[in-house]
Length: 408
Figure 1 (spheres, rainbow, N blue to C red):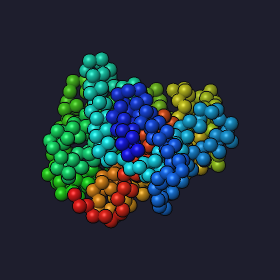
Figure 2 (spheres, helix red, strand yellow):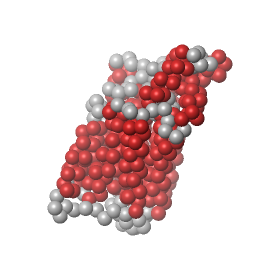
Figure 3 (cartoon, rainbow, N blue to C red):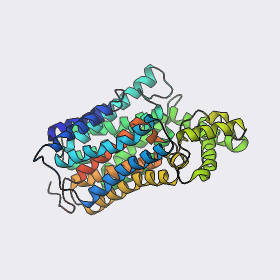
């Protein structure tokens, strides 16, 4: 089973963006593999308090949304995204019972980031797409590219600490740079905001490992990559930043919501008006859509926001659709794992635990930032990547007792 689990995790990351819904294959393998836990005398991990707390958060997210969807008489499709977090629990139990090989995660992330970067460059240079996005939305593509680049950065730190051969170091370094390139080329400004937070954690990890010079080299390489992309003719980086400033100014001056930033600001305004009216249970998705449509008909909101099924802000969207319970569950989903990973990172002296915990911290920080401009949890790839990466990284952070010294 460890080899099976390792292969599933490798696939989940390696083909997550280069094949449509590529992440689903590895995730499905982990869920189906959990059937072995039902065998008589099957190996089971000894779960600790933090394991139960993490699983309670995942199950609680599904449970609260199930109850609220029933209250709003929502159609069956509205149960799909929350269900993915429930499915992450058997994957977590399987990985705790049969630990994967850590290299499967790190190498899979590097391969996935390289594939995402090369695909983005192909779509941008050859197909002349303004915003490369693979087979998904450029926003989601950019978000997942950041996650892959972040994991590849952890993989690079690991390769250096283990003194692996040059080809492995180059593989992971290429993953970092091409993952960042995919993110920048996607034009996903929300994912760009997560980069400084991930960089701070990665920099701290390298400093703690005594790799200050390497940190400076990587920081320089990343800055050079960003500068080159900014200086290229028709650069998507500078064009998107200038456009954001222009659109925000237009909304501030004349309430022009017929733009990407303008529509987001208008949805934020409308959401904050709707939320207080149904704080206990929320409007539900259909109720929110009807309320927005009524505001448009009454001339109280721009027609540009009417067809959007979410409010492009994770927190306001949860509050409007599901009231205070919805906001509390999404906040717990982000903050509880963040706290658990941070505690492991702070208290452990083991290399593999630190790497997995640091990656977990960056994962949760990224989703916290993504949520400011995108309701990522309303998308299949958003919930799948979060739920299963939490399970994978948490299982890796538990493979050595806290406080065990690194003897490598």
